Length: 374
Image 1 (cartoon, rainbow, N blue to C red):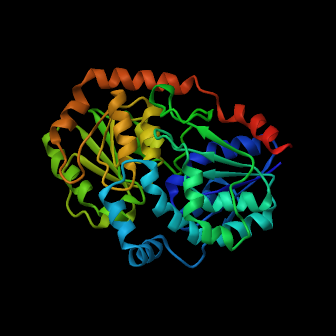
Image 2 (image 1 turned 135 degrees about the vertical axis):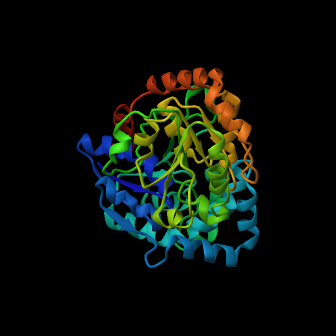
């Protein structure tokens, strides 16, 4: 069986698909990726990658988005409360990817397309080729009716390829722990975090002498929100007898200036390796960050500054595994509670056990083969 994994422009849309892509390849199937901009990081996981939007960087894409659809960009910056509200923005971005995604699919000739959440370009490609489309969701939100709504917003892109509807065979993979599921159904699969590889620094191979908080704000958040939330964390750090490790890009590190003694920066660490040494996590509310912390059994604080990250942050708060602070003003009392509230640690341990009991990526491979008729 040949599988084309179609992802959008972001690292956070690629990483959740890698464990299943590895399972498919380990079972003898041929796997390739179709992605764009920062999503090309799939090559680091060992897969061939087709660039579906060459010669355009992530910053240039978002600049084009802001210029052509300032209304949608404002909504993203202010925060979107549910997936339906995110559809117009994703439809715009995926329309930019459609021609390249269809061309990649026609060149690779897959038997099945596995795609990231809200990827309308992948749905158009699967419909044109007449192959099944399987969405690997990020979880925590009810995605009922989202493909149909995406199709409504992408009629021009679909029309360019003679597509008038959704693929006849579709399925969804749900990685949300059962007690946090939104009820949209789908095939359950354990979240097995992949956050990239790298040589670990010596300090990360040793247990810290005091509580350590892993801090990350993802790869897209800084484009829409800047480094303001991170600066708030750094300013609050001296109030606590804990070490704060900020996983950032080199450019972000250069812009921080002098740091408190208990703040350490690190460029591109695998987040799961960092969190394995941590007491808690503090992040922007991204799905990959939230799920990696849950997989590790850590309580967390989220500062969801835009997009639909508040969906993930609020889901974790409802389950009692984490706390939410406004990105515009970090509540330092929440950091103190993050380090001391045992109920957060107990709930996080329960969710970690739920995740461990879910079907592994390898267990879904036969279901995908059956869907494709392989």
